[in-house]
Length: 283
Image (cartoon, rainbow, N blue to C red):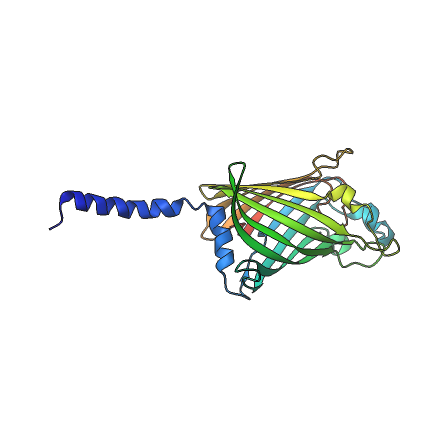
């Protein structure tokens, strides 16, 4: 027969199991889950959402030649579709997974019946990268993943509305409990002057981005900044708050201010607020 001390010890061990598992924070768990995924299964790369938005004065200049610039409206729909899939496992010494990702962001003048409710701008962003798991400690955070890859971004338009660029990037993902930080520097692959339709894009979108994420009781707060130290004050900033509605459906409030929200507006200072629904979040 077990003594009462043995019973108490067994109970303590049962309680200690979940507690030990809880030490793996929610963001670290997402990174580890991705690393364990089977190849060629789809998951979200970035949030997938649908927003009704209101922006400041629309950027009329790129559309003037079409004769409809003065009729662009401030209210429009913004939505993002994003997915990723692992293409290969453990390429280098049992580490380093190869991923393909794709993100599409659309800006739709749905309420603008005067010009047949067109899509004002759509940006396409395919990327390929290798993700390495790490466990280094840095400034009280755990560097859990280091990614490196290539990304292309364009709006698929003909001149004079064509915008595109290619980059080599690295990404450091640091976590601690409910907090995550992503630092993503890049180097642009330059085109010939004859083919480059946005040669100064780095001056507006910068050479890195910093994203902060915090999860609190099912609410997720996200902050993004680019071009923070620019001498011309061309800061890009985005704040968002997502919250549960019912089951997996979530609400989203998103605020953006600065340059580069879309490629057609890369050198135009934009202010936007949007409210809508989110189908998949960062987690």
